[in-house]
Length: 370
Image (tube, rainbow, N blue to C red):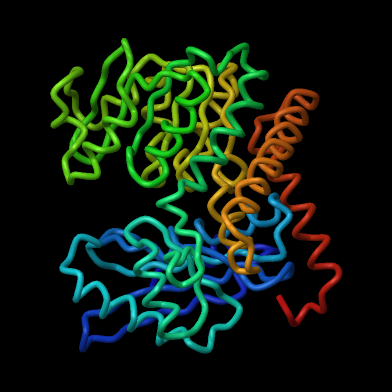
């Protein structure tokens, strides 16, 4: 068992639960980090190479994200060790089995994440009666379909460009991970005049300095093709997205894609973290020393969980998107202004903001509740 408690501190984790059902080849983990502000909301991730340590890091990111967004929810995360591209029937069995095992963990509300979607959340809801990011037929707001996280990234970008001598009109954008988050971020930024010059997926990178038609590429990917199958643009290795010269670089895939050993390859002015924990702390420090603005994950990509929290309370998409815009703009400005005034990295400013809010909630609640 991994020594995840080396990460433990005064905020959490509250509990770590391992789920194992050999009869259906199910292996999974739930980490509930902190519930001082309310029941934890966090996604269910499915991938063959996840770990308990990664699950804890993601759960902590959700604690900070929910606190920074001012939500009445703590942070949690769950993972299933499996290939999300497995046959649908087998995937349903694993998701339903995992949900059933967590039936009594009422301080955790499950949402979609990498490798899961609103259909998976419908299975969870059917098993245990609680989930967010549901299909519209079940009264939900399908986060990946409407692009809640991408919508938030667009509004964060509108504020952040003022701190790095940029304008969104004509800004060159590169998206690492043209999936549920990345494609919508590109779509919403394009409506503000930004130009997508590169996009990558697990199979490769598509690069065109003259601009890639975002709507066309989204349709292309929806047909089950890779970005490098597109007839136009240069075809490069997946890792080449790091080297693309751009104004805004958006990581929207896996954790730790930018580390101390490759951060010097980035050639950009602004990083908007669309994925969770996509940079190591050392890599972010390097960007800060180079004068590159890097807006951390739990500020930049909070649109999805804000939408989920609004859905959980019965609000519609219009109200959710209005809340995302308001919160993302306010938090981005507060974090970057604090970072500028105190001459500290944006993550340090964001951590101070979020931890202050978590601790205030903890001081109000009786200790046994968290």
